[in-house]
Figure 1 (tube, rainbow, N blue to C red):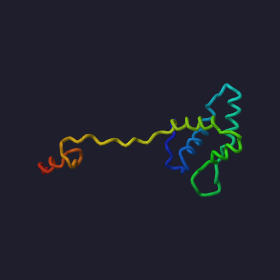
Figure 2: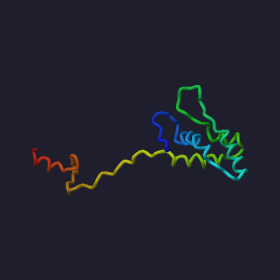
Figure 3: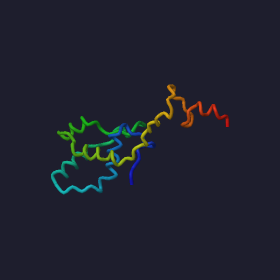
Length: 123
């Protein structure tokens, strides 16, 4: 089941939304290498929500704070977080308008019909 780009929860940015999506999928991730698993667990433990008591956008701690607490960059957690982008449904892309159907330099169309065709037929 895919999540959707949030319209109900107010996230500070896409990174924050991807970390919250990762929280839903983390139990389905299996890592066989124990050293990588330990590093990932340490990285994910320091990702915390900020401003819980304020009525503001949902946010997480800054990456600089994560680096300071961890002593290195949280690369494994960031990689998994970025993977969650593909789990979010994309909004419909804006479709490009079809090419003009005539050589009208002004390009005036109503319901994909050139305006002169509408004027010729009053019905």
